[in-house]
Amino acid sequence: MTTTLKQALEAPSIYLPTQARIVDARPMGNTEKVLTIELPKGVSLNHRPGQFVEVSVLGVGEAPISISSSPSRSNGTFEVCVRKAGDLTSVLHQMGPKETLGIRGPFGRGFPYERFRGKDILFAPGGLGLAPLRSLINQVLDERGNFGRVIILYGARDPSELLFMDEVRQWQSRSDTEVHLSVDRGDDSWKGNVGVITTLFPKVEIYPRNTVGITVGPPAMYRFVLMEMLGKGLSEGNIWMSLERRMKCGVGKCGHCQINHLYTCQSGPAFSYAEIKHLEEAL
Image (cartoon, rainbow, N blue to C red; front, top):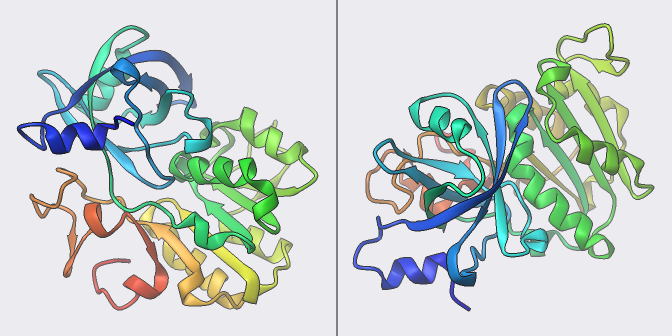
């Protein structure tokens, strides 16, 4: 099977992107847009949940963006959720179907979900963190018989920042999935929990010896979510998170993402807490 990674290894430069085509573009929230991307000639991205790609537009630039779709639902395409936050992402927000962009990757180490089989899974995404974690959540749901309980605690600053709500409602409707939502600030339409994501943890009981906790969100959230997961008795090796900060080249050359002796783009971005707890700059 031909993959983008195989193409990159055979290419004269690891920085040479594969030209890909946007097949769908849909707005989501106030500042996000989901792009569905197809690689040429049946090339497969062959990614894992938690990995990222380098997305580029000729003459504008390149940036690392997490893959939001699960491998189990690839169907020859993959999805990225782009927050409008700079020159490149502003251009990506203006692009639509049939337009082309550059793709390198997938890069990094994703979540080792095969090791999670047989265990209960506690997901705790915050805000835009649901975009990369959606890849793993849907992979787990598509292999539902291989996992124990699935609990999703999802928080955002306000209702307008809750992403993928159509899918979240589908998850809520399943009898084999527990979903709890919270927003820091509610509005007239909001009937759910109000408070930061950690206010959801007392609402769930878990069996810590057989539970894996996974969180993705803003760095400021991690310290508090970690305290909740550790407080529930999860072992440090069973708590996982994604450190996507400062990634740039994707291939461990620029040093932009270096945390002590680790290159996040190579050794991560998915890490267990046990792996990074002693790294001064990690959290």
